[in-house]
Amino acid sequence: ASVFICEIPSGTLADRFGRKKVMIFGYAINFVAVFVYTIQPSFLCFALGEIFWGMGVAAMSGADEAFLYETLKALGKEQQSRQIFGRMGSIRTFCIAIAAPVGSLIAKYISIRETMTFFAIPLSLALILGLFLQEPNDKEIRVHQSVKAILQQTLRYLKYVRG
Image (cartoon, rainbow, N blue to C red; front, side, top):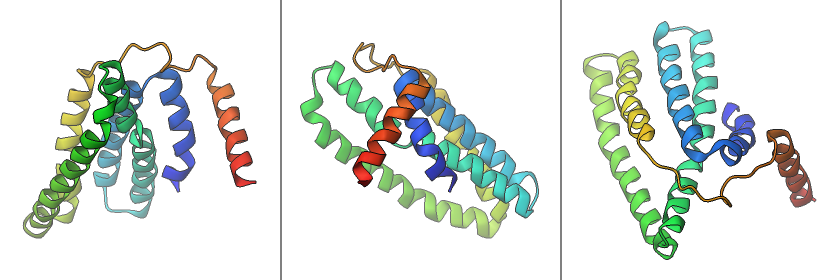
């Protein structure tokens, strides 16, 4: 539910403030979610962790692909986007194929709780690497409207599409 609720606002923020900032925010929020999940085994911590996790996922949702496409466009290589997006999908699948058995081993031999704790490592690396990304400085990429105006425009579009 939190991903669904935060999806449009996060896209709006990415349009207004830039993909890089919103992606970094998403990694940071997911890092907070890991901490909240592992504080203690309780439903409250689980629910709060899920809310933070959903906010982080929504912030990153599509921002990474948009960031990559805008970078390719700035380099004049957008015609290669299908090939590069395909590679990106393959790399994600490969990483999941590696992470699943490693997470299972951590859960079996250490603890289920530590499985989530160990997830902070790749999140930290992504956060650090994200700080070094350079967002294309293309004037047509940024929307110079207020966040409220962008949200209103998005909601009008959704109402129009829904019929």
